[in-house]
Length: 326
Image 1 (tube, one colour):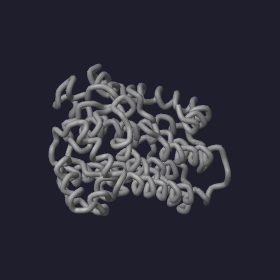
Image 2 (cartoon, helix red, strand yellow):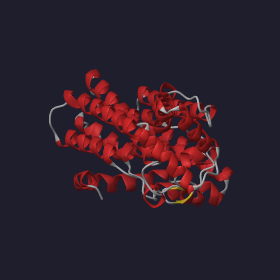
Image 3 (spheres, helix red, strand yellow):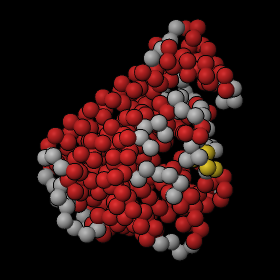
Image 4 (tube, one colour):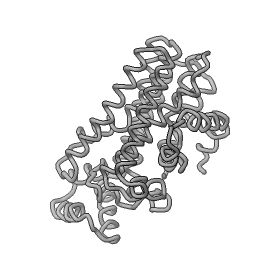
């Protein structure tokens, strides 16, 4: 466990335990199969960053209500639903080191359990008694769906631009981070300034998280990563390390890179060659630099808040997102 992760866990271990309890109690399906499928992902090592960011946002805004813990489960349910659906769309093999849910229970069950989790998240949101919060959650679900569609449209395309990539990860990943933080402010009746600050912080944390996630696919191994090495390429996803390197590569090297990318059955040594190219043409370094810039923007957004334990944990999470390797 990294030093940053140790520090975070020491402070929020009780919150994480409460989140686990809420996830189990709030699920409450009619069929036990729903719990089995949902738990297959939710209990397989998830970081709980999204519900934790929501709780921290309520605390940094001085929330005094009694539904925050239950409400935090919304963000993990939305995340889990997206993973269940994404694994089907992507023809994924592994998720968090184990077989994807649809490989065990089939596509129909995985889709329907994902739908159930979306519906459960919506049902819990009613407890806040705020149409604005329900509206924000609806917008998050819509954005995440459109991000997945955008990525699917560009599947296997070698001409995807950095701008398009940023728009995909903003919708697919960052809006849920952003929404968790923003809704933490909304449920606390925080000022518009604090709401905007937390929204900005969450957005940049989410963008950086996905950039690092995309980077790890080229810098880690299957055991550490929990999914097949080179899975992004095999699923037709061109992410920032590749996009930048293709743009800067010499023609002969670009031809070799494209050849490897187009072959979904590339060998291990071919993938290693591609990684060497990503280092040679700065794709890995560039992605790290861009992720770090977004982390800095997230930290700067927190300047409107007075020093507190919650703000300190936010900063620790920002550092952890940047340094993680799985």
